[in-house]
Length: 195
Image 1 (cartoon, rainbow, N blue to C red):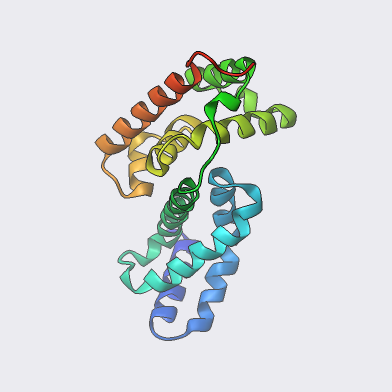
Image 2: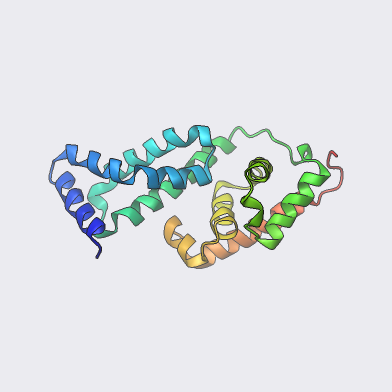
């Protein structure tokens, strides 16, 4: 166990024992880590609010944490699940049509997903454009399918790592990632898209 994990475990125990002020130390220590996760999976302008929700959930669930020395991993899992919940709520009112993509945008997005290449993410302008297109396309997936696709294909996590973060079985992650990639490809290949 590294020193940070040991320190986290001590602070977690202090909070559980009634020292609610000690939670501020955990919040300060892990704020950037949580924001990093949230910014990968949610709109940038919503990140602060979602990160706050992550810490609220963590605080409320702290007594249930069994392995206190794995606080950071546990917090990461809460962050991913909170992002999934954000998209679940957002999808209830989605109104974006896949036909809003130009043929060029669809071809470009399909190429990125097919090759799983991270090279296009390096340049800032290309990154913004791709992220916008990807967000529009991902809006047509269920929140669960979206998270599986993002973790496996866009972040490059193994199915085991994604399953561990999401609290799912490896088979469930594999099926959802494959199905969502196939659905995205099908949506992007539909005739009658606006050019």
